[in-house]
Length: 378
Image 1 (cartoon, rainbow, N blue to C red):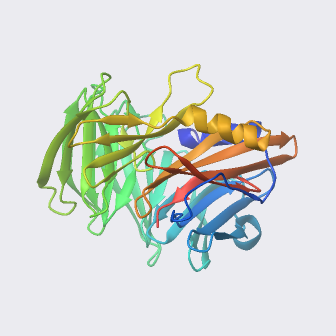
Image 2 (spheres, rainbow, N blue to C red):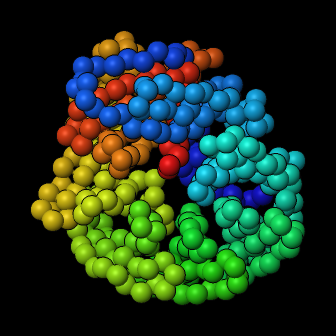
């Protein structure tokens, strides 16, 4: 396996290596008793196991599951993908790729052992899935950058390849939604392209060409495809497409001091009711790497939550330094969720989840015996 690339996983591995923790108490700053806390599910790990924590905001309680014990999910898994209620953990061992699929609501798990064995024919670069298929991007032949997709049908064990492009310069994370697979890459001229694949027919439906403009993609709550194409100045065109017909529904534009990477930004941004809720990056060497922000498409106001003050407040209450690790926005409660890690000692990694209002108020800090890495979209 020469080039299986998951950059964000490497970042999280660094977090897990450097920042451990331990505890299960709820630290709750002052807040209005009328506040409705969000329901959320978060995945994370300490130095021993992978965990899932389901929090019920109505009763202010959560259930903890050890996924290493229950579903045999190893801490060294490659990446995590979500499709509806199904979360899939990809792993690699003894020359083969395997996966564990878990319904995060029911806890039912399915093991897909060694569905692909590495060979000298191709170099695997990513993996993702639908409800009943697994997709792997690869270069073929090995040593080239000729880009193809292999589909594994889990029901029939059939394998099908689809060629995309010769001599690509770089590839980015895939996105699956609604029977469509969205693949972003740089072609041999270093121009950005986004291809849309119908996974039922295994055909390339459409190719979007962006030149030197960077395309970032996400799915809104109506199931539409949104493409934000921008430049290093932070100016973006925003086009909303019907995910099936790929016809434009709406056009917009916005400007924020934030570079969004090519490919999916589903974990970094959401658009709800004419507002963009996104992860802002602080200029380094800030002690805090990132925090929530809101852009209003109507007023064109860009409001950045003061995450530095919130982190300092939490650190003072805990008496320990924290490292932010995960981000999400919960539209039902209009709150931001921020995961953090604490390095206790060389054997102990803990963490927690901060609930922050749209106004930038810290509403709740729930301590956990692991460091969160991924919020699961309900």
